[in-house]
Length: 193
Image (tube, rainbow, N blue to C red; front, side, top):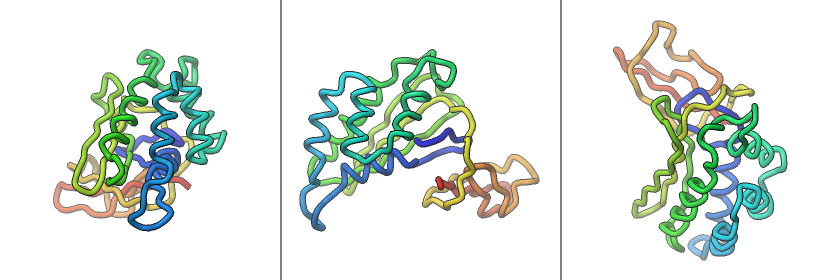
């Protein structure tokens, strides 16, 4: 989260901060110092407004990003992306609760947003491996990015090539072609700033 995307996947500044808060350890191998308190507060957060206050205070999400979530993800007005699907907060809340519960005190948490053309609703996929719990928030597409992303992210999408312009170095506002092999193209995600 942090801006709309036209690409395939995003970590975003808000997920990065929430994951960092949930994964914070004062010493390597030590306990996750904020996880239990965050989970307790999240369970009590009845509205998206409560959640926004929680991530501002516990994950150091700035007010501008919090307002962005309020106006695009959780609103029903003209700036909202999925007015017809509201309220989506209960889905996202339960998805994050399940993620934290599955991670317990042993596993790291890693979250991503996947806006998907075929999605007709909002859902959260939680997948646990021996090392981490991955949370995938699947939504319909958002409005386009308001800012160009410049920072290469450790995320790639490999798919069928759809146009001759898709050559190494070809970029959109949030991803760049890194390789083309016959008819298969690899895009690397870019994130803010």
